Image (tube, rainbow, N blue to C red):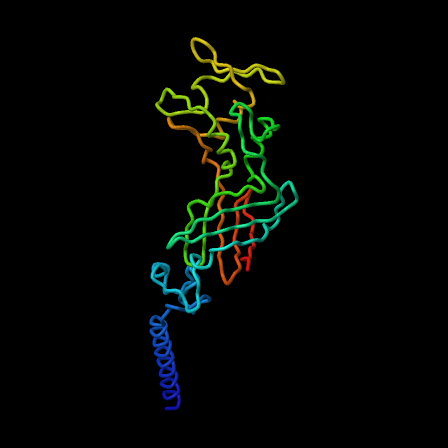
Length: 274
């Protein structure tokens, strides 16, 4: 008898435990997630916006918590800070962001390092910056020019997250604008004749494009860099947009933490100026 009671009690307790667990699970399915900041309750997910939702598919509909400011509202102004584990030639690691809001859109700029860029180009046949060889310019294409105010492009807002890119060849836009576009055989336009480049190289060497029936003389240094720096249409030339860097930052309460892809990913820390 005692054994039967004991067994009955054991099964009853187990059933009760299962019932309680099932009820709890059912309640968890109905826990509201809107207006709840991460970290989230077990079973829910933390969306990129920093808000909890029942699953990733629901993230787009999750509202922002109270007293929560999106990057669209937070960004306008000037932000200054530094790039982790990176130094420009000057030794500086500084970064400055500026943003202006026009209704539901943002525009802005990115300035890196210190110093002042050289004066704008005035001669289409002299490489820029003046005094630098073609190979020096090629080497400098992989890093942003210090002190230049880059235009923030393709700004994207996802709640507190802000993403943008900037073109590292933008400083050469004035020089490219001085160039003459050449019609190519495929209907496009180039910054140089659509012909083989022949370079004898060296100081005082002669270079030319193998145009027919008469070769076209060329500035050796310009011929090295112009095709990488500039892109053209029938109307004229501008800087090439095939080299850009991406910045990704979360802005919260006057502080920003994120990353910049400059020869690899580096953390950035910025604070809004008061």
